[in-house]
Image 1: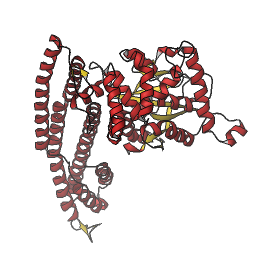
Image 2: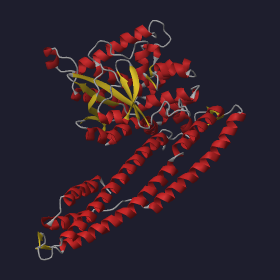
Image 3: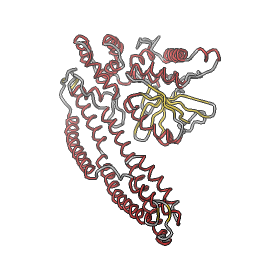
Image 4: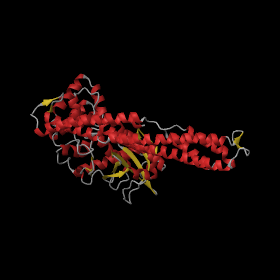
Length: 512
């Protein structure tokens, strides 16, 4: 079943409702025949049942593994090291515990959701088949009251029979439309839920890397919290890019990087090194980056505060005080783009927050950060505007300029190319939502332009959990909105000064 099928049924629903009386015999026959020919539902209830049972069994096995790891975690483990990067045994147990707990959370309600969808398909498929058969029968009887294929035949016309056939046809086509709509909505809900769960699962993998499986678990779980949906330091896209970059290294560079990972004192420090590699930096630059953060390698809050602008649920990091805000400047596009780059590029973030001189009081302080932040957003702003805008004295940047600086600042560090997509209606926003969520699930920030009256603004969509989107406003804070707020066209979160109507987004090509 496709949206086109539902559209065809709705079209024939209108034709059938209008086909009554002597002159409606041909239209009734044609509408019923066309309505009966629309395909039924896809999806086999037996296959759905098998999938639900298999997932329930996987959940049972994973739960047993979780019990064993929980017991080991509770008893403690002896000091020891394992894996290619010599991770501590306790770190490995914590990573495994977090990973298994995340998998249990991912699998938890999938069997029940699949089973509910199976029941929905099974119920409506039977009703849909009966309605289609009814339409076929009505079409045949109505056709016998026509001549030349479509004109009414007065000699065979029966007004009472026509009235009965019309009522049967309306009931049958209504049943088909209702059933198709119900199954389509249930399918979309299930697909959205599966996308959410798949994003969580992808966040725990570094498939294909030359590292041991244990190292991969520890790296991808670094910075994550099994009690939340936070996927940790490395996003899924960064894990894949780090893996590809590691596989491309020559022998000497690989030995150097492995030595850096081995000498790191925490999973978070190792993960930030891999994040720098994913951002496209050569091994020598990664080594220099490591030199600057090594003294705080086991201080997670210090690393998080200086190597990224966003703290999930709490807004921009308080280290910067009023920082990560564009202030009174007309630089929302540049400011949100610079912050988004800092989120995916820890080397860049460190230079913004510390000037490349961590622990130097003259450079590593909120006031110095705000000066660098202001200068950087102005640099990106000025470089991204054209001569005509400067001569005319107009403020702001266009969607095209936003796309260009997203490619320059974010795309070069994530390996993606952004393009602009207009959002001109409720259907347009609704249709774009899944692509936006897929992008942020992979770890790609998504710039969004909003308008209200004559005012325009750029925000950055940076997170997705369930039916919620996390938004960074370059006025200096983040907040969460529901999917309905986005599709309905108001993401101002109740702020009367914030333009709330989404009018366009910049999407990475990877999610098309």
